[in-house]
Image (cartoon, rainbow, N blue to C red; front, side):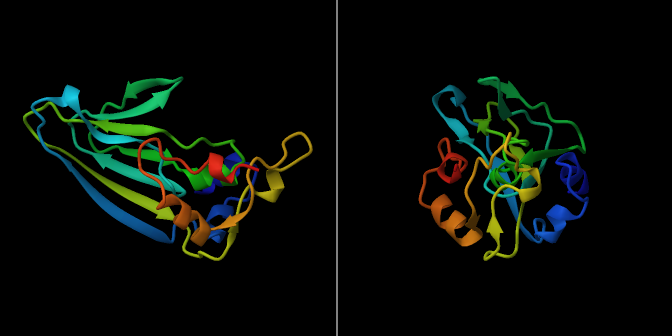
Length: 172
């Protein structure tokens, strides 16, 4: 988080001061063999709602990210973590960091695909979130409005997962 803060020209502790890692949710994903993977999707295209997501995946392919409007496979690397920028960090960075659109394909392999995700979110739901004032300027005005986490979570849970992103809802 310190490096992400510094990448925005902020003090290394800025994201930690905002409790950005204090609420974590651990999710285990199990994708069994699918005999007709061309007829379904394992997990629909979406972005993650929080600050960052850490993902540990096994050696079975299936995760894809969207890059230049095309789906690209994320080849598993033994012991490596995939770190996703999430919607709240894109908003706080005023679009300097981009939330990653991703999906999981249905599993055509005989062995199941397993992954573990840790979603990191702010713990203080009453804090106001929006672009950091330090990175706003006349040349780069705020692209998003201020909101608190309660409003954000209410909005998140009123939408289906397909193509889910809150980025445009909170644009200024």
